[in-house]
Image (cartoon, rainbow, N blue to C red; front, top):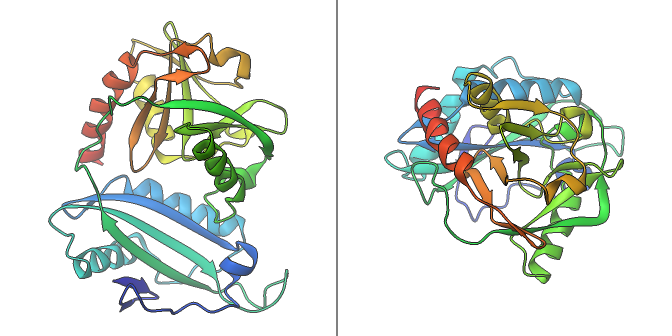
Length: 281
């Protein structure tokens, strides 16, 4: 079942048309949210990121779009899909309503909520091989729009095709300054000694929820220092550890980049703390 503007429809129902601005222009935002046993992980962070993104894109925020309203709509969608007693991957999409060309006729919005089963109720660090490579055909813009979770993801899609064609599990995306920005599906962290680095938002990476939570966790510990600094591709092979973060998987440990193989000690340490933080959020 799919929630379209508060009305539940069968997943096979076609309720968008060829004039959808999300289809025509990528004029849409989305949040991918983890929900376990009815509890929305990091809901406050997801909600405020969504509201801030809508303001930046000059979308009209409906008066009823409170945290409580949208959380209830998510709960209704999960219930309709019979996932309330398990784990669900929820996608909440906001699309400017159809009409206009590059200039929209209005800034009013439609919303869509989808839910699918989660494989694991908790964040789990996989032991499987996970090899990555640089994607250098196209580059991420180092600006604020790149920080937003919009449906303009053709670069990520093409990088995903490249990864699949060449037997990689993921690709590292560079920005127009040839600095590391992110991966296809999440933020990237680099560990060297007692320092953990991740690209700053100014370098064009997604303003990720788990990125933010891990920075808070690391800053609250005395074991490591965390830096939001530009990362050169040359630093990747010198790192002790590389890992990816996103709201669904939590942490994905990179095991190989080119000829360098990596350990996953910091990843293992952080994923338990992230699970604990998620249950309390």
